[in-house]
Length: 368
Image 1 (cartoon, rainbow, N blue to C red):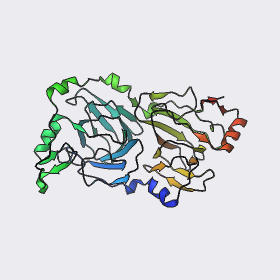
Image 2 (spheres, rainbow, N blue to C red):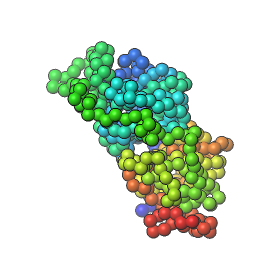
Image 3 (cartoon, one colour):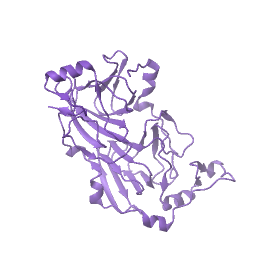
Image 4 (cartoon, rainbow, N blue to C red):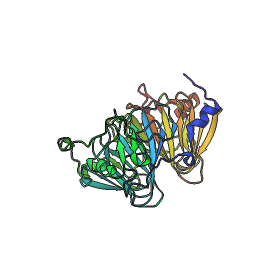
């Protein structure tokens, strides 16, 4: 089914970096020294913020949640765990991630363009050890990612600053005159017995969960349009089966996250020719300028995204994605679901591809 989109709908799906609204009291560690300068952003979906004042840029369910954090040099996000997938993408800066019940089980240093998927239920934390304006994106699995589980020492530290976390997710600041409701249940630290059941992961094992941008190995013929003028691009499969149609294009992590993550690199004038998709799709710019045009021939409107800009592309609408800046463009693409998204190309793209010797088989796989 081909959908159309009105201009107001288009507008709300474009999220500019300067439109993000920071929440400086999103979590229980908001007053703990070393963690008190964090700025958290709830961009798509409810996220896991414990703040009643958070601003959500786009509340529509996508099958995953998308957020971000801005932290000056030396600022830490305290040890915590999740029940659903958590994937970090470094937009800017140098970050140290560390994990384990005491945070001393291992560490990894990530830089711009690196991607890190941390297994569920493992306590993890991170700090900005680079620039003062370090910026980090985060994807959480599922529409409802549940609540954060904090390491016992984090909860104990917060008590000294008047913060109390309730089991229903509310954060109470007693220093601001807020009172814990009489019928409320306060979150208690998990027990020693529960801590002992959490698996341990070595640095070697955890390194397999990391995509290093500087060590990237591109695949140049991943899509049907790759030989058509304007369709040249390099692709990298990161999370899930990815969206590539080439059977020989591998991905870093194939296990289920509730979403797929792809990295695309293109020179100006190149990108994706016209296709549509039944999956929810979110694109965000790591580098360069990218034009997103909606409609089979762009008649539904277009927008140019620059660094750190985000767009949620409507389902079942044709879109073209083109690098239009002066430099090489880097674009991340999130698609909903655990299965490989099936691209439905516009008829003219299929015809043009056939002339270059490419077509798709009955399983939507590329035949060269």
